[in-house]
Length: 287
Image (cartoon, rainbow, N blue to C red; front, side, top):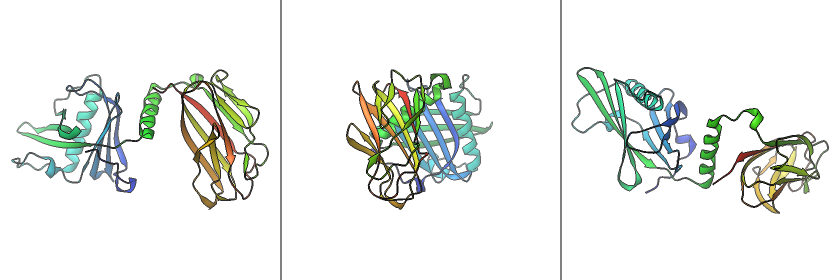
């Protein structure tokens, strides 16, 4: 059974390990691995993502005693186990991939689960074994998009390779009207995107785009800014009556030869103030 992601408030948030490529002997595909703690201690969250399939798994740990074999009678401080996990996983992410003190194996388990088995030799006479049951995490389309973005970020594109458009507003925009933009820059984008007139952005190349719009509007009586793609509203800022600074970010996948979008100053209320900004980045092809 696929596990749904829990509310962020329940998750350990202090990420102490974030590895982009960990290779396990029993799996052909590499994994992305994160370890998060709670103020440097338990509870702990282990998270894995298959870099090819984008499937995700997680395990939340409150007590390491529950992770030992049933007949084990050793007791190791939690911080020592945490350091052992960090060392073992980091070794698998390095070119060497070996350590004398720690070993980690990743095994396939029942119902789509994975089992992470860690063995630590703290002393010549003491080998401690801990097993972590990693349950599948329910993922949405946006999770897959974010995973592909992480892959692209790891490539480390230089500023010269960035394909994007930047624009700003010179005058205010009344409610119920599309925002009029002035082009600030168009970086290597003439065949990928362009500003058509002063309200419409045209995207010529199919793929994944990131749209970021920020502006100030004292009061809007609901939505403030809305992105309209090919005459359909696809994303809006949250509904709120007093909306001083509004920011809207949206990932857009295009499949046709030409896609057009505008930004709507939604509803009634005060105009969108001059100085609003829009950035559009072409992330790459999306398969």
